[in-house]
Length: 88
View 1 (tube, helix red, strand yellow):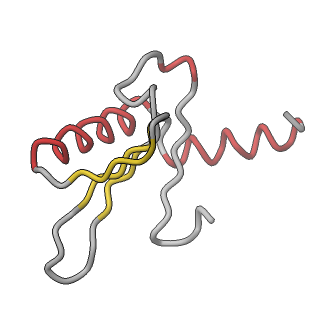
View 2: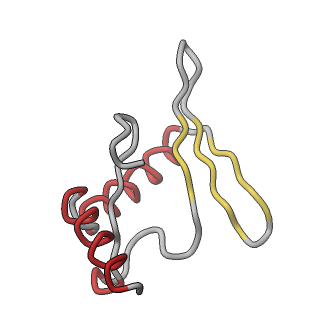
């Protein structure tokens, strides 16, 4: 999967500490054509779809935070390969 041009894999280790998205999963969706972006959050109460620029900015900031805390794509692939060698 990591060889696909539209796939980036980054491992976020527990050692990275607390981050802005530790309570739920989310996605930032962008579409072709003139459709506006959309935010999606999974919660215990159900799913939320977000459209406001303020909400999308918050999700974007959380995503940027996760990318900064995570291992680089190269380090992540190396880490995954090393784990698979050890069967862990």
